[in-house]
Image (cartoon, rainbow, N blue to C red; front, side):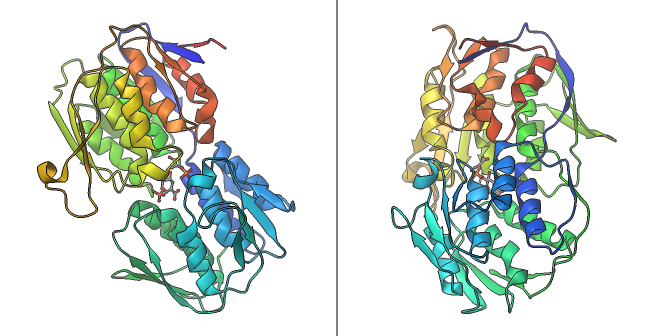
Length: 419
Ligand SMILES: O=C(O)C1=C[C@@H](OP(=O)(O)O)[C@@H](O)[C@H](O)C1
Ligand SMILES: C=C(OP(=O)(O)O)C(=O)O
């Protein structure tokens, strides 16, 4: 367990931000699909990326993706064409994260995939197939965009390419765009017409590639700036033009008086002591699910009333994130609650959640559980600007950002290992 604290006063410093695991994992899969490969610079040191790199190089029969969603989903597609049989497995939580939508789509293409334990869930036994049964399939787009990205990256290498029709409300759409723009960087063209993406058969063109810094990780610095009396932070490695949907975080925090200016090496986040905090924050997170916890913790720290929608994918991530945030914010006297449909005006398939109290530390130092979810630890960490906090299983951050605590220390935080 770690205890985090900060002496108070203005928050200043400079961070070389970790690389994006989403971008790195796409680059690794595309590289493996490109004859001869290509050099990738600033490959993220995230556990999920190291894992994918190791599994792509492994000839073992059992491949363990651990808790890494993109690693598991991207490999499910990739291994369908690799020689021999492999068993693709993961952590206990991974075995609870659905994979049936992707398996059904791959089976329609001709894949040889069987469930080793429970129907619809990892682990999978994956054999080699030409994936030439058809060149046009449909897939439900309302559960995880990672299934779609997995198919898209494979698509140009299929004998007749792929015509992929997305059904239902599309979640996490910026991640589909990220996949397509990386494919385009490596010379692969597509057409997106209505709900259908067409990728003709083509070869990836090798090109050197550099991984951008991680905008999802940047969200924690926005969270810190929002809770500091004043802040001036330089975050290196991020650029205004980004393929990451979570870059929207710069816009979201502007509402709390946290401003962003781009410069040569990255960006500067500033908040002045006079910044006005609005009483209310409303946001649909369907395009940026990974920053929802950051904003919930910020609203808690500022005592801003939050109204959230687009959280439907959070239930099947590293943990049920809504439930986990509800429990942990509850330790600070905050109720995160579902708003009944008749009160929120929610349309079918939509749910609204609300919270309004300000974090109350009068019960002493809170101990936050992390539920095997890196984002629980990192999203709650900024609250240490208001009162010391304790984080259980703190090294869970390694999934995307192993140097998180070291970077906090450079901003003046004390990180005490309580064992
Ligand atoms: O493709 C990706 O890199 C990701 C897609 C998103 O998942 P879903 O599409 O399952 O929402 C996101 O939450 C995850 O952290 C990374
Ligand atoms: C949801 C996440 O990752 P994954 O789905 O790849 O496990 C995440 O990093 O927030």
